[in-house]
Image (cartoon, rainbow, N blue to C red; front, side):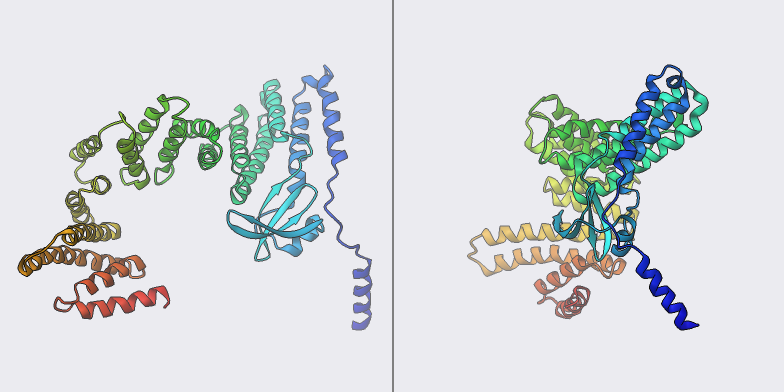
Length: 448
């Protein structure tokens, strides 16, 4: 019985045809669109919502058909079963990562460790098919608002498809195309029949990608600013407030075309720092503007601005954190230290507060040490007195780094500071023992 079963199975396997190359019935999809063209041209049919809903679906199918069986994480054997054998297999470097690339008539699929990580659609059955689907669905709702449920369902499909297109475009570095896909996904959700507010995060993603693309293609900055501004107007902000920093870059990248963009860039940062005073990128952007662009503002204005905010909210850890960062940028390390002492007073177990206090004391010590090295000493006593002052500053850094280490034992940067400081202070009582301790811990964390 078992032998007969195995023989039958073998015969069945032989009967299964070999996996073919990707098959997309382009003619059938185009035929549906041609029929739709005729239907909307007919006065009677063209006045029905169902005609336009069918048209929206026809364009959606034309857009989605080549990649409908693709998803991130699918393994290579399953992909072959789903869409067939690739016409070519090779390697391609995307965003400095070398991936295996499978070429098909309509798409190139990228693999890492045998699983799909992204793809590029290289050929479209109909250009701008998602936008044409949106147009058709909107027309259906205009004709008959009672078609809202079916229209929303169609728009959701278009939005999901375009969001996925944006996601994989982000992974492959196709930033302008990915941004356009996210914007189209937002447009699909913006139709009256959708019944809820569109997700402004889609515009944020689009604007972010165009900000990145602007470095190579300055024309992207204008569109990026449009998307980011609209996203903010709709109430969106990412968790850290980086949206204001990206908006700054979009305006700043257009400053040569119109000087008014320089003030818009400044305003974007000022709003951002007011809402997210801890954001280091925003602070760095403000310092860049205030120190390199004539007439934009005095760096002291930043201090006055944040001190006023602190006066209104003296218990804000974020504001004191931001104040310390501003004074760091101004190279006033004493004020940075005072600001971060307030941070740890308000939040003693904040790793960043303790860590940066150690950093600022270390930087202050480095500056004093630099001054010492530039001096010509004629007296050993004077040299020893100056060295004592420098070492006291370095010594002040240690307890803060040690607290930071207690809070985050696996942080290699903290341990590196600790071992370096202890080695520098090795002639002080107990410092060589501490050096040996932290040096060994550092090696363990780094796997040495």
